[in-house]
Image (tube, rainbow, N blue to C red; front, side):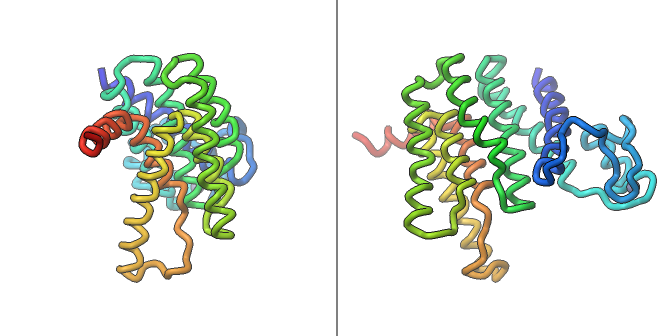
Length: 248
Ligand SMILES: [Zn+2]
């Protein structure tokens, strides 16, 4: 049965590649059909099969031989992997569909932030509204918890932005609010905490390896997205474990 979410994830990942490539450039996601940026040749359906086509073409355009970004198969594989995980954790439930929407948004945000150091409002602002709506529909999180999540998730970053005068951007703040809307304030906080821990660990390693200077910014969106994904799938378990060990 897990084959279905894997295939679903590959198809959505393929769509996300279009979003990731076009959204930051302000181009339409729906038209025109995908074409090679090098030679403009339209990409045939058999050269547009997730992961497989990249492997068959050895990462090059069939017409002109220009290298295709490895981001394409990576996004497809990551989306597929995350959908499979979500299915294994949640099963065939309405919550799986919520997870699919959230995880797809987080994959797109991660890839766009890594490439352009921006987190697009066109994803996060509708995402905030959608988070409240899906919680109203599924009852996973109460609407009060969801609204409190927006206030807490966005508020933390607002405080950081005001206190630090830079470093964090408004995009991080809106992503924090979006995660709060989907997760509620408790798991939203956990997502941010996990993001800070993961981001701090990676920044430390890069600093020690001399790969990044102290002043160079590392985009925080991907870590926040990772924290959000973990918190959505395993947050209740993590919180239960944590509270069970620390609160007598
Ligand atoms: Zn080409």
